Length: 238
View: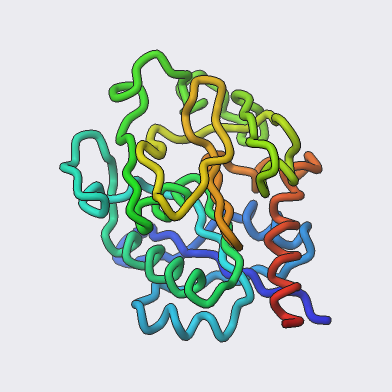
């Protein structure tokens, strides 16, 4: 059987007069280590997102800039570097793959845009809107190594995430936003020590707030990508 093809959402950068579409090597490495074949999708309209279903078995919605608060009907108070083109792309791809029943993994921005797409809301800045919490951007604590752990998270028993990680694990952390009100479409199954939502799930969809692609030297974090690849492989045989 061929390796499942896992599509990555692209990210946007400007260089001189050019627009670059990219994603970081760590996502590709994680998917390859898990047994999948990663591909980078272009920016997609709703119609193009439907076409993307023909070339991929699963979707990874990756990290990036803040989501536009208008997506969840809030004014912009603390959101930075928002990009409506990126929002439209991620939501179009998420909805197309979700409607088709193809497996989806959301990472960092991915959990946020998925929650917003399904009717949830976000805390726009943890430090300002949830004072007393941990510092969730480890760069502000001079922990610059993306493979370094920042804090612990705990998982709900009998959840998909618990079946992958067991009770707890250490994670890295590079975000200043997080889920506020979770979408009613999802079950919250992971929290950090200070109560911040770190993981949500439903059938064929898992989304987490940390960056497991940088932690695949650890079996439990690699297992999250193996879940995505195995689910995609199972869908191939149906």
